[in-house]
Image 1 (cartoon, one colour):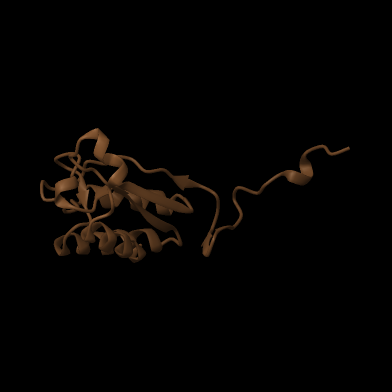
Image 2: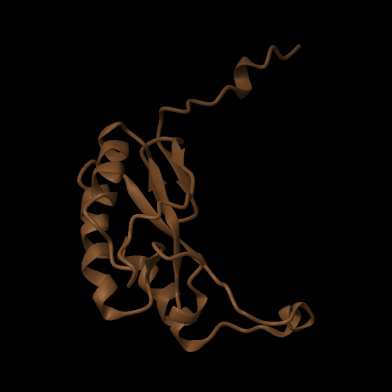
Length: 138
């Protein structure tokens, strides 16, 4: 008779998600940090948050949602991944996460101002596809 002990999982031990190897199963879920400039550039406020998470031992940090196209911005202080001036903050964020062996992932939001009946025919625009490829930075 199984007691369940043979199915126990070590949440502190290494874990793989496809080709990604995490140091443990602790994940910081995506949020809305609202810590960017009106142009979507990271401010200094966001880095200590991610640094504390990485130093605390989180295996994977999923960032607050970022917009991939300027027309798809959800809020005034949302972080962007749409333009070159967003790259320095993304690179710095990647360095902060990697410093303690933590992996990072970007949560991109796709917002289009269209009528509800048009949602089914949406396809990613060129900037959104390019931003999706940039996620590899983290």
